[in-house]
Image (cartoon, rainbow, N blue to C red; front, side, top):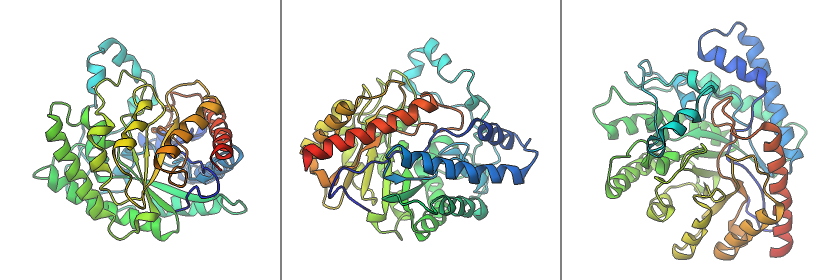
Length: 380
């Protein structure tokens, strides 16, 4: 993994706005109504190339495929694993339960309302290797003729799968996590072997507090988080830490977020994960102050921070000077070489669910690149 040894590098969390026509195809596929599989696959290939080009034009250094082939960053696994034939009830964040009128509006009239979220009703095995290989091949093809600093592909963690896809088959939560870890290990290893950085998405370590374990005490939640980390580290055992990054977040929706678990209460557990880089929210109004946590916790040797310097839920375009200020704040605490500028979360974690207008997304990424240049000038 490249570090910011000569200047501040930039990246993002993973999902980027998909073209409208591809979103239509993805939901037709989700409903079993896709008419032309070949046309869908061709559009995914061209969209991947478009997304790579746009990232580079915006000044992003560490790029990915935008997750364009996936209906959602966590639920896509239902099409790659066996055992998901049941039906789960919708997830409701605890903070929105306290503001019900607003909560009803958050996801209303969005494509996410029609997205399938099945439950696990049978044994889990990795079955659809073809979909993963197509993602890898499409990304490799999109990289022909361009030269980003580095590349990554994302995959759902066992813990976040357990959050979104309810267990109705395994004897307990631990057994469910173990089965997911065994299956997803195949995807993680394939991404690594293809030569890309692996990003594992782990919102369960933070968002899980006010969704999956909202009624638990903090101590009980920390024990669950430890179990999730144990399963994750087992699944990642074959990959060098420096070839992996982890994304942590509290839910990519504009809401009150007053039930979010403080970073201070989970950072010791997060730092036990094997990936060298930790991507996390650091720009939005609920978590922008938590850079101070790293004044209290020493960053372990070999670890890298990817703090969000862009809020992924607002259409404000951050001023480059604010971006630079945020970058320098972290650099002063943990060292400039241990900071890569990132985003709070993805800009389209589920296809068609975009709080930020797509055109504004690209403008925000440009602002991040300019802010990184300003910060680099100050730090070097």
